[in-house]
Image 1 (cartoon, rainbow, N blue to C red):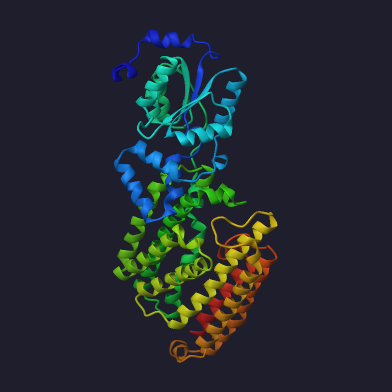
Image 2: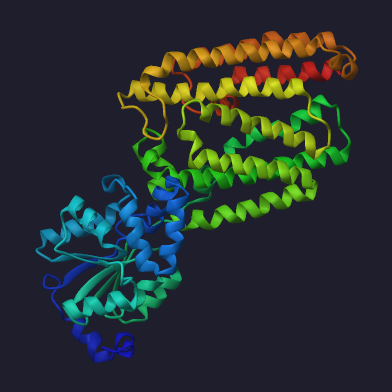
Length: 492
């Protein structure tokens, strides 16, 4: 059958379709973006991404052999839990109703056959499968040809979601569109067939803000610490500090997106993270793939506008964060040290943006205080799993039995941070910078109170997220922060 036959129809053909009985007409359902609110090619790619250099080289080689071969390779190496995929409830209900009516239902997908078979096995609703096989990428007109050969022109209903499905709808009796795109709806309506829309809402702005972790930008306020401690209040210093803040915020968002894409399976198993936008299917994975490089470009543009040295610090931050997302976060205690280093790099970046030489006291204090907070974060994650009677985390090298020692290490690191700060106050450096350095001693009890309170509240299960995010929402923590800033200003 020629390609022209596939895309051209007569009015008689359209009229003949409308007389076909629904019960005698097969229902054919697309997979990616239709039956599931995700894309299994991206799912497979990111699930296997941490497998290392040899695997990623094989991915590039498979890509050169064609998209169908790439899909087959990734399907063979990726480990997915098909029961946890974000299924579209409306499409699943459509399939079940069709089966109740005695209709035949088929799964037709451009994804690899191994994925299709596992999903069909999980749902137990399909009479047959059409899928890519390593040689043929079953998409668009290739899929249309197979469906026409199996059912005949106009003798099947098709459920799809994108422009590549238009050549298939052109030969269907009825189109089910899982999309809110007006342009796509107009194209399908122009085919002269029955059309029914299955709502697929676009993610609102707040969903994107959640994915970008805008609330986590507070961590990047650390770039202003050198501005405060060095008393560098000139306008160009302040501008550079704000550029550093923007650069690190945008860079952090890009890494958060990447981290969520790599952690899809782990997030879906988590009691609270399972509703993250990518894991839940609220935002398409392809949109995340596009957003990551865009955010990085904007991030480095802000850094270069301040200084090339700041761009270098941002490069180090991105490289270390990337290593953390792909590998280091799975290594016992290494993940905590790396998190503390990432916080400290923000302080260093704030210094080089001005530029001033960062104090060794400030860097030592940062490492201890942020190690404490990173350990609290791990403590909270383990405590949640214990309370919900969940097993040891699969994506972290911690066991539930480690909870007491993690809490003890968090407290010890916090106390060491206070000790470092006390030694800093006694140093000659402070006497050169502050008119009333003795006033800085008031920070020690405030800091000691706050760190100890965080550890105790984590033990009481009163903290259910990142401790820094908790500090933003906690009245006592905000008061402590304001008090410490005021003490520094008075001492100046």
